[in-house]
Image (cartoon, rainbow, N blue to C red; front, side, top):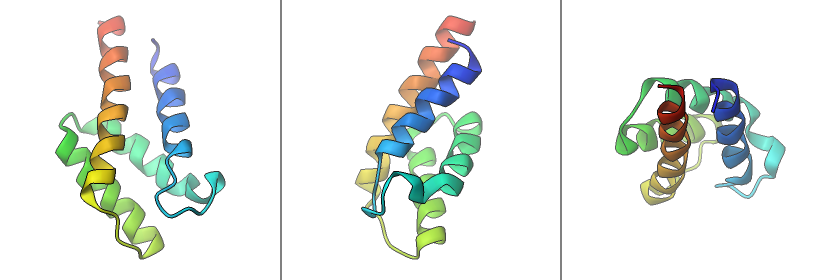
Length: 87
């Protein structure tokens, strides 16, 4: 899987994840920030914390870390799948 394909899959996952029930298009800026963090972070807890920070900062609403962990694991699974194929 190419990096572009990995990003597309990650974006799709994040578009479907709607922690504030605001609709799919409500998180475009947050998604871009999370994709950047996904490139840098490899640990699910670290990524989950950054996801929570990004979304909470933008919307001023609290998200349970468990919800962020669920999406974090999914995103990292896509990333590791891409790494195995690229390497």
